[in-house]
Image 1: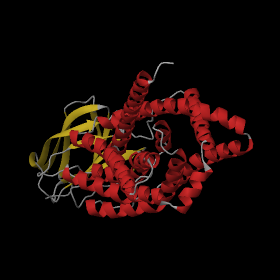
Image 2: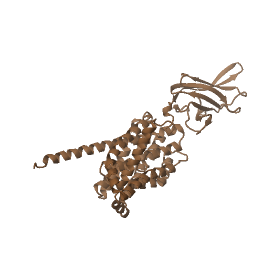
Image 3: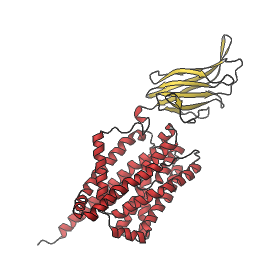
Length: 434
């Protein structure tokens, strides 16, 4: 193997230009799997070995399976040092690569250093990038789903009670409890649990970022289905999304330092603002409809529950479709933390609301808003801040949490409906016959 000073620096190359520089190092102490994500890849090999004569050293690269990896060119990048650039063509699959540094002394060749059996994994096109390879959905179906979402948000606007808004304005305790849970308690729990379970730093950061996300649109949807306070749920979602503009950069800076991750983290301000507008605009239209044409508002209120149920199943299906790529990288510890994060949010939110003796619908709403997180904001931060392969690894967290929270809420909804039906049937049996 190469000595400690002989390392391989993996560079992502797209259309002949290198993107992010540092991705991973190999040395004699640590054997890793190189993961390639592009068709064209570049590997830079650096060694402290000095040529005895000008250009006497050269690099030999051997690949076991040419169907997965092909060596296009090996170029010496400097005359004074033994640095080489290896250009590769990569195809989906796995293979082994051997790299040898030789020095020619006249007719004799001498092996200086080598790395044998370097495992190389080439990701398929569906694993290339979340944004470059999204789930392929028919544009008409996508337009239909988008129309349903906007109509559903408009219907939620018709259900807003101004009396609740006035009450929350005078006593904003539910808003405060939700904000404290979402932006202080949950990120700390995500950090602590990721350290206890021994997750890799990129995955740990992914979970922390997911835990510091505001409430998602699914919050007021489940607040409706579980008979919580819909008006409060919408208000909490909008408030936490606004606070995310401040708290997500603060938490990303703090926990990245604790995890030992250096770099500049980009907070998707445009995405956060657009999320806020995507909620407020149709909801405001619903409020106007309720105020000016109450008859139409009643019609919209009738369709909000079936629409919400439909969108819930569509959302869970799309989350699984998009997350299957990342589930292949998920370990048992990652899945366990994915289940724990939303469950802890539900429990913390409900516990704090009960401590302050808030009404049951309010307790449900705070619990739901604390557990249903807008994981895709964390995904945006990860994709904007990390190199491709590290982003791919860190993206396991938000997708796992999104899938687990959706499944947990669906299970709670089914249990809630089953118990309610059981209670109604028992009351019907006990009712006296007339």
